[in-house]
Image (tube, rainbow, N blue to C red; front, side, top):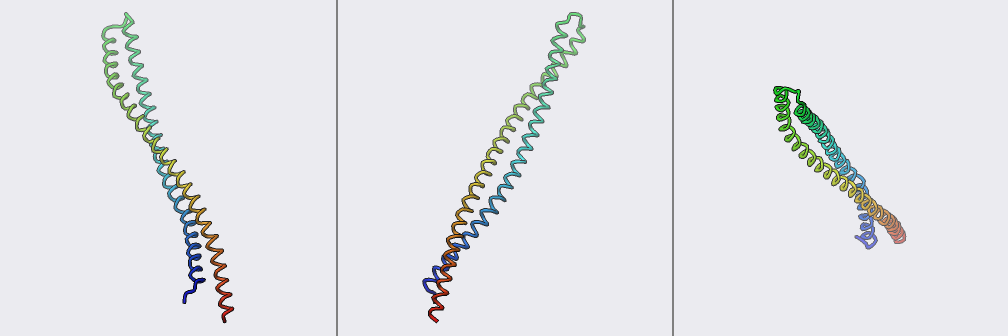
Length: 168
């Protein structure tokens, strides 16, 4: 036979156990997800570093190509330089100018990729903060359920025990 006290006791037992579940879930799940997001963030940061390194190498090559241009212009101004030397400088300049244009495009593409990776990192950081907020909420609500459910469950159990003792 289920009495009102037993039904109420079961409700508070349920509240207590639900609170325990919320606290455990609030501790474990956000930490696990945050770790996953931190790992993804580290991967994206490594990609940004790789792209930045690639950009710096491409810019070094662009600087060397600008050197060839300056060398050609200097040789062109010098009247003592033979036509053969001037042609050699011109060929080197033309070859390097084509590379220069291609590399400049590569730098622009790499810069765009880097910006995309940085925006992904910002999104991941935002998600990590959200999981921290969820963790606080779940633990808080779970703690309230544990306190209310535990106190009233104990109180109802004692009350039921006293009622049974009184009736016997």
